[in-house]
Length: 112
Length: 116
Image (cartoon, rainbow over all chains, first blue to last red; front, side):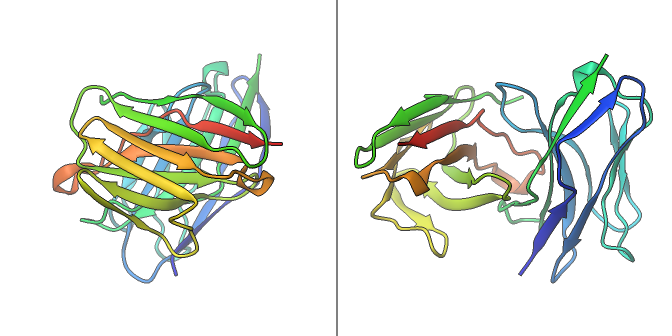
């Protein structure tokens, strides 16, 4: 079956550091890929998405590129801020199907 | 964007008791509600899908008699963990279904259950 594997956290970085959170997937078809973020006390929110190979999703300075050849969707940000501290979930879903398959989540803490 | 609330956010209970978790979609009507749970260091896993006015659909391995789901209205779905045991301690999250295959899906803030 389909699955998503994320790098284990927690990840702690200093402000303005470069961030990479790895995500790889296994899928029987051609899913859309997502990054969700959960800030403390809030629900998961969509951060960015990509619907097909080589698409790049971007939002709030974060980027991720749908790499079919490596089955990856790594999340990157060039300069993190304290406000980026949250839990990040990588996920996949097929078009027309509301069921999401999630990774384990990666807790990110940014220290000033 | 849509707002989804869950209550309670935290619950600690004794083994053998039942716990009810409420999920409300505050600004739109949800004919479908997805219930997820996450054990420590594991993925967020879909448990069941509730449908307003009909029986819920459970994922393989999820006991329907233990996790009772009620979706009595378009804005409220409840998950009741009956006769809770320590192995039911987990993080439970609800997510209203989005019509028309839209990409954006909204989630509640989650309920952390600890069974002693």
